[in-house]
Length: 163
Length: 100
Image (cartoon, rainbow over all chains, first blue to last red):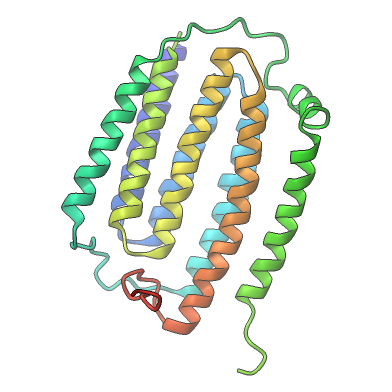
């Protein structure tokens, strides 16, 4: 059952990712990306990462993708050709294929037998406890980063006063 | 039981597809989406290792990556809006002001 779910979600993610890369229209590409994220959320549930699965849907598929769709809507881009850039494209393509094949080969070599999963692995309680004890400083720094991002986004996107 | 290798191979596949998108597409918005896809592939690898090593540190890393991705999306999209306002295009081939 677990294997079946893995293959189902995995194939869904890969096919949606290919659709994302090949699609001409930005809105359709955004929809494929949302499908990829939903499939990944399912995989996180298979991996006992319940909090991360919920965050994946709320933050990624929810907040970030809505932001993308808003910008697509705002800019109203009509893509004239949507063609792939043809300069040096073959070289880049081959390079990425080689790197990807190497990554996959290395991934296939690693052998780790699954550890015994303790009770409450990946729940909000367990992750939250770690976040507020061992990782308190990174957590607080993340809030500063978000504040900087908010200020930066407002300053970059607002119209200049003189025009 | 799904082996760790399957998850790692899936992560590598998604990462490579994202990289192909970044290098071949010319629409800045789609390039951003492909970068998000690459970040997601890394997240999957983190969570898979976390499960198979029985150590939850990976979940914290994923949490931080999501924070950074949200910040990056907000600032990046603001930059794209500013670019579109100035150049009326989001084609990255047309944005070559700093090209030597």
